[in-house]
Length: 249
Figure (cartoon, rainbow, N blue to C red):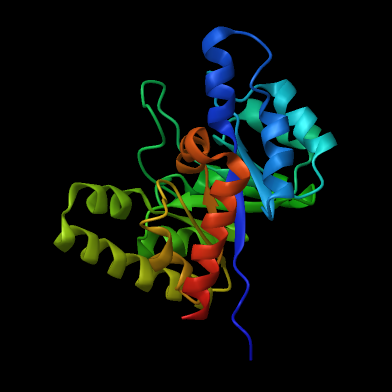
């Protein structure tokens, strides 16, 4: 029996961040998405924020029309974003929390507290034929609520673990990794597909890739940053090599 195949979704948001810094047409995030697919990405992720700080509505329409692999639209659970998702019909929609002042997504959705709102929201997306993912902390209560909402997928928020590794806090990293392992097993047992994302780098990818319940990793900021030094195809190729090695171990 061969090693399992682990999908890689590449988030191209921060190509748009660089573009928007000058207000011009380049670098083009759609071109980056096409390069990512050529380099072996299994899909492309783009986060359409309410304040449009990076990805734009036009980017989403172009990605949907021009890339050959599945598009995963990240967005907040708002009426505006529901309309955009229904208009573009991406392969998948990952619902995430948003705060206007945050530099990046700071944590998972409170699915427990918002279940009465999220359940019909998920239903609208499902009825339109889209796969629905909820971005959550590795917390069993949130995962149970996600399953009850009708979501197909949970994407576990890897940021706490990755930040602990960067800070050299081994104890905190080990504790958070244990949370992820428990959460991944529980989610899979509930029939949810398990993804992991946020903050993953060459240094941290192996532990998540090695979890047998995980079927997809979504990685963006690190790959775009690394591409400045070695190019996007090379960064994706090396990330894939690390993922494959962890799956085979």
